[in-house]
Image (cartoon, rainbow, N blue to C red; front, side, top):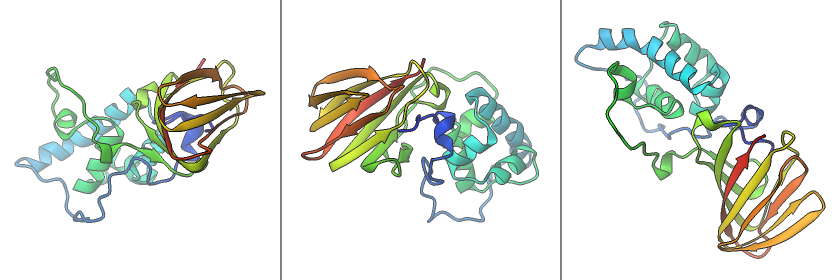
Length: 222
């Protein structure tokens, strides 16, 4: 698991695939810039608003690049007002920064609202473990605090994790299937509905030996 800090923990950023959390915009017009009734005014506001949104989330340029799939240099150029983003680029950036178009361009306080992240917009990690997909459910500002993930393991799937920061614990709830969890020298079996809590500052492993399984995982950092 190598410390899922993204959205995530900072340790994870170097392992995240560039496409993680990126909206598939392959069919979008690549050369279409953001157009509004007042494009000059909007584009003048964009750099400062994007930079402020990034700072509010506590994310570096590298982190935004990893989350959005937009290159670090392009993010930097957009924040400096040296490049105008296409619709596809702006969409990826707003999803990574947890803001919408209106929120990004409207300086007035927002009314009560419910933030929604649709199933096809949830960032995923597929290159950590065998037969294991990790969905990142917690927002970026929770990195290093209480990070929430959904684990989907194929039959025989395994998620091997090196020790996290001293004092870190994991809370696992099995939703479907059967899992075997090891933490240090301890091993326990879990069925659907079971919850386990264990030390994550030692080597630990989650395995689905008999069939597919799904679980929610909370990483509680010390």
